[in-house]
Image (cartoon, rainbow, N blue to C red; front, top):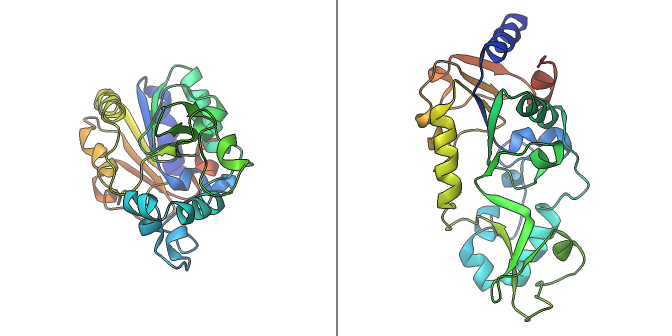
Length: 241
């Protein structure tokens, strides 16, 4: 393990255009549960599978129930950035990390100080009225119950997150693809690389420093140049910028 960590440190020291691509596992050390691990959201019991509740169709047809689940299981306002978020922000401030591409919607990368963040699945911190398009912050979801309505026009306020059956934002995807294609080192962490089209972004990396940091194996392990098993906060937190 020490040899692997030394290799990671050496590559970071030598690289000048690093991109980080992460998933739910990046935020588990902040107390936010992931989806597919043993204790994850998809292994808990509900009247409907989480994939169904978090779909566009369910949102349209069972809006009240969607919001009960969303407020209880998707919002973690007390969560704070962990060592992984902080180290990535430090690498960006040092000019080494050029972008963070994340599947998370919790905003913890920005809270830690990262600026160039591509949020593939949106953010809980942005919410908009479907009628007048006015935007609201997270407080609009935390303060009330039931379906949140716009105080300006009475329209339904929807989280600016990508639900199942909805397309990813094209501009965000294009930015992420460009950043990854230009990277001289791609660090992937805290993701099973099982959700497409996000997982397919790995294919745009053209370098020879593809690094995977994950607690469990992924479909891309055999293609990686370096694979480190373990908690990403602990591993990244020990790096020197």
